[in-house]
Image 1: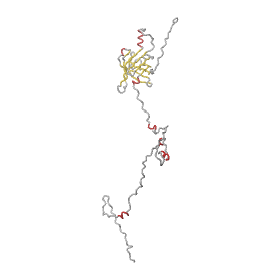
Image 2 (image 1 turned 90 degrees about the vertical axis):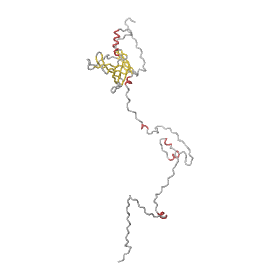
Image 3 (image 1 turned 180 degrees about the vertical axis):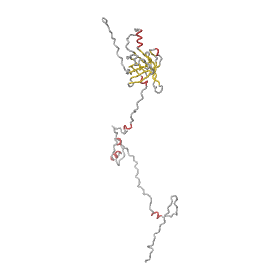
Image 4 (image 1 turned 60 degrees about the vertical axis):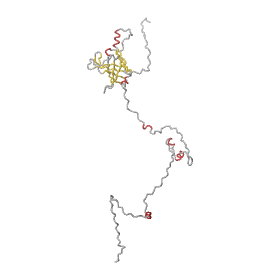
Length: 301
């Protein structure tokens, strides 16, 4: 049996196992061996390769493109070279772009009506009672409605259905009202007899004085009061009476009444008067005089 040589009996040596090091424990610093210059030269370099140098920044300020003032039209490279005002190799010559008259769309605001606010849809506040009352109103009807205690259970017309009249309100707070029953036989001033004057007084009613509008709380924001400083009925002079009010036909009809029943010919009734607004007479022309027609009998001139 051949002798066994050490060539076949070499057993690989086990490398010493590296002990795991705790991260919380600092690494033990061992003795450092000096490194020669030759060894340093043979060690591989661990530094990153440097980036190529950046190109130099062109500090020349380019002029603004004149094409933006002409509909935002872009120019080619040739046009950009010419817009600088000088060709290559030539000296700089300042040139001004010709003024272009702009028509059509205003490019200062490309949004145009995008940010335009819509008109306010909130209706304006209604006019006050004083503003609505001011002016002249013509009487349309005067009706007295019955109360539960009235013996006559139908509406009546205290001054007939043909009553006419006016009521006026001034901006400075005065009013005047006149009502007349037409149809009386005419007579000249100073010629009438006592019965004729008495009949004229019964057919006419008028008063005037200041009017007041007061705010007396919720539901009574605009309370209208008439004062009787002048009146053809002596017993009413000095009175202050409240008038109920409302408007109809878009403010062209004024309806006046009283808060409490009024005694009319011995009966307690609720009066309701309707007045129609008259037209503006500021630029009116006076009518011609009424012609006098003389009626003569046989043999009279």
